[in-house]
Image (cartoon, rainbow, N blue to C red):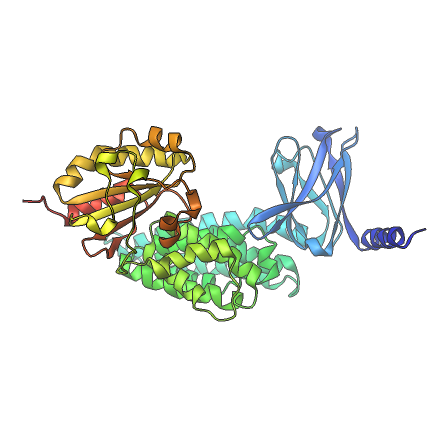
Length: 460
């Protein structure tokens, strides 16, 4: 037997010996394929698959490298989440889509998970009801003299919370389920906290900031994305002023990045996701803070595409002077609109907008700009469109109805103008004053128009 073949066989046997099994019966899924998948940060990956036999029996395997949360999925695409903690698991039921029929028959951590998943929602419902009554008896003049029922309500709240805490405390300290359940509870609680338990907001902020995004348990939990989304959603919806929200976001960004600085892969993954999230929510102060913090950290290795996005905020931040543009007049869509340099424009403000005919959103956004153009022009705002194209006909067809100067050197992303402005996506816009200082980095035409209506008056 050749050496390579021998090694492959040994690795296979080692994997078999170190594998754990998931067995069971799903009576209504006979002769269907069953898949087991796991989580790696923001992504999922396949672990195993098997055919369910004609009696509904199945057998799958996973290894300790899959430790975390996995999910079983069949043809109906209804997943059943399970804890892959290095133990053999057995279950039985009718189908994954009928979760009420599923019963875990083997595997301590999954049994504990099943019990908590059944009991915790009832406790949460009861707490919400008691909280409503507590506020009524504490604040409503019709009830606030009744101290006995108020005390009873508070005692019952305390008992329910203690019951929940006791369940978690009794789980083995090193078990995955003991870490996972309170983390899952934290992530799923934000809507309730924001609406009904606002007094818990500070401690919920603190709990999110204590999450370690370099922790492999979180990375494999299926909560990686949800934890980020829930954290920043609560920050944004905590009832604070916008300035206070930005302060809190900076504190959260610092806490999130600190444990990631020694793990470049996860640092890039988290930074890219959070940066995109903040941009999408128009939280530009926070996205700028994140960009500059990561770029200024020594020892961090940032992926080139991400670095380019972040560098936009260092080079093209609000208040910076944008580079001048030198144009070749032959590359304008309409020769009558040709100019030699961006600095030749004498308007009070200029919206420099990058886009392309192949960009679906650009078709919508630039048509909208065209409808606003005359109104903006009357207020002293010019528009210059820079097309990231490599085909002249596509460019001229796209811009035929644009009333503003439109230019493309047909070098697409290699255009000097695009690289000077650190453009990495379309549409990208910069609103400049007559000194070419960046006054706004809008993400939508609506945002541009709102700013113009708020801060610019008609030219006399």
